[in-house]
Image (cartoon, rainbow, N blue to C red; front, side, top):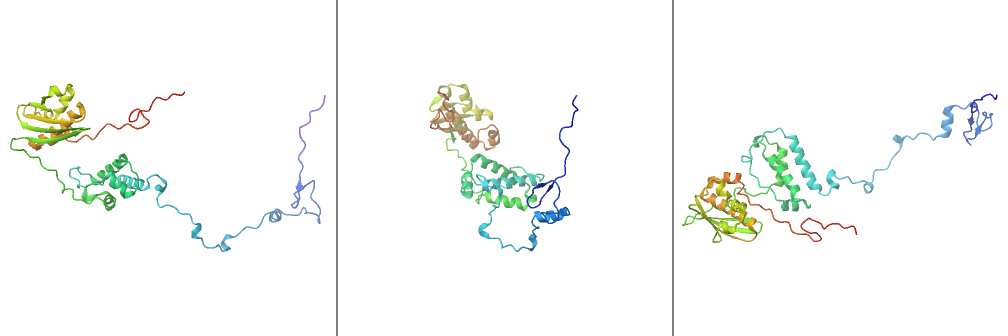
Length: 307
């Protein structure tokens, strides 16, 4: 049987010439390319260039024409850099002074903030109304900090957002009760407008010269129109005469609601907190969003058909 020999051959020491890098079986003698007495340091010095000492080199001064401009704020590359800077500044102030005591909103310093159109012209950026509302909420939260403990950096941060007007100068005209004992209130909702006369009586309601049951067929509309009187338990103490126009039944009913609430506050101003809790004081600004071209309605798209 043939003997099993190990695969491969034993390794041999090889030498290379530092000039031509040829592989040699043994080192060459003196007078040839190199001798075997060469050290590692001498081989490296012959192969590599000497190290460069940059401390002894004289570099030219930097040129301003080749300098790279770095923006001051990292928000420079965003769509709204100034708004982003203001938002982050107020957010950092909120986190920094989160432990300071607060006062009630009624006791806080009365401030008139800039509206979104004024802020857009100030920063020159197309800021959305919803985004600016978040900014105003943080301003109100910072304004509720106790005035005796409010830091100077918060005062400086709030100053650019204030309108320089007297908040106590503009006052609503007080309602007047005429010689017949009537108080007038005007209410609006959607495209409806109502003018309501309220006088002390036994609870009669007339809308455009007709009874409320003849004008509003739904119970919900009738209850919505008389909700201020029902919420304050004044259903059988006042008579209502309303002139309403425009819109549909829902808009007309809710416009009468606001008109009755405003006329009732003329007769009894102390009922305003109760009416506000009932949701009858604030005018509802919601409207139907208009139809857009290329869409079925305001936002509904037509059904997609592959073929």
